[in-house]
Image (cartoon, rainbow, N blue to C red; front, side, top):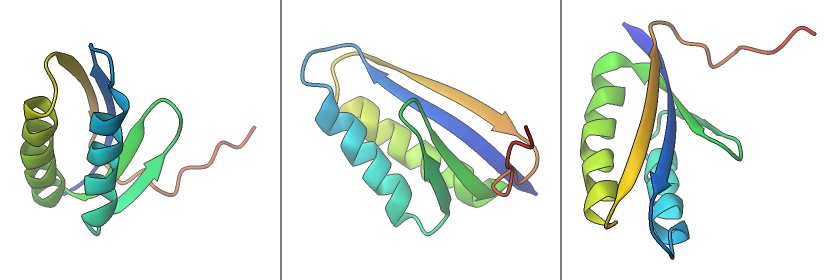
Amino acid sequence: MKISVELTLTPIQDNYEPAIINFIKKMRESGLTVKENPLSTQVYGDYDEVMGLLNKEIKNAFEAIDRGLMYVKIVKSDRSEYAADF
């Protein structure tokens, strides 16, 4: 089953950039399709692969910060080819 996941990591602390940068780099290194914009990162692929990666890397990200939020949206389909038609 293919999924699309939108993620936003929000450390609630000073010096938050290293945690975000490291998290995004781990997503990029995964071999999955990853797209980024200024507000979120999207990861696309097989459910088990994506969720396995997220399970590991969200835990690592939370261990690297004092306080933070992770917003996650999951869609059951691969939306990586989506382009607005307006």
